[in-house]
Length: 290
Image 1 (spheres, rainbow, N blue to C red):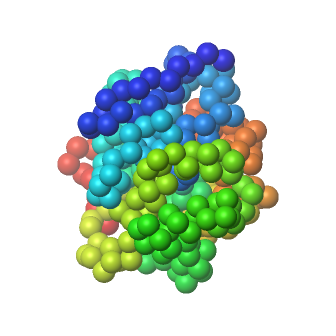
Image 2: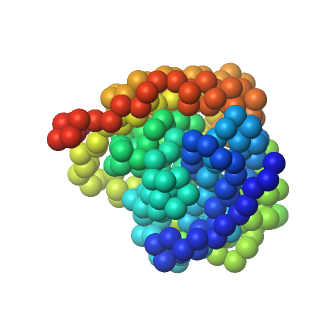
Image 3: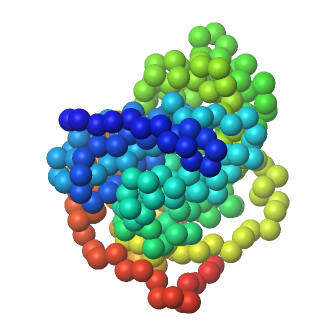
């Protein structure tokens, strides 16, 4: 399969974007601590079925720029990046698939820019609004989020003893050796942790919740029974933020990194779902807020 990695200037940053195929555009958004390499099994299959795949390394990850300011990693900044990447490579409108932080970006992008999203697929991570009041179980699963809030201390602990704590958090899943090599680059670990510091700092729970726009695109939520980091309820509870057709799929046996653990099944789900439904845009002036 032929593909190219193009470096484009977006919001003052250099973003590396993997582009492959021709046809209806699909934007693939990875999370922590990944890059576009997360999608290496899905890209050739989508291309073979007539899709044009656009997979950026999100800001702070992979070969993209790593801004120093924590505020640069707020979700709206990443949403703006995606909008500009879509304008460059997808003609502005595309299917959007996200995993982990990429799913959070995809949810927000779909709610803020309904005219730009054909179908939405969220893997592992539910709508950001489901995390405004997390359950005790979810807080326990995401204990590492609190650790990540401590600048320098978190970095030192994660690197210590050949990245022992980082390896324990990942627990042998995903691309652990790739992650260690990638995060060892200057500034890369802090950039990845800044996503948590910018969006999941405990003090943010004390701020008034903003109104949430619903998602009008047909939406598929996928969660895996082996996910140690996110509860199933965070995904199933996302249905109340979707006004378009909603579908939920549970993959038994896979861990958090669904694109790597269940590539064949995920490919089947994507091809089936992206070809379903006609995307219906909200009537002008009739957006509903929560």
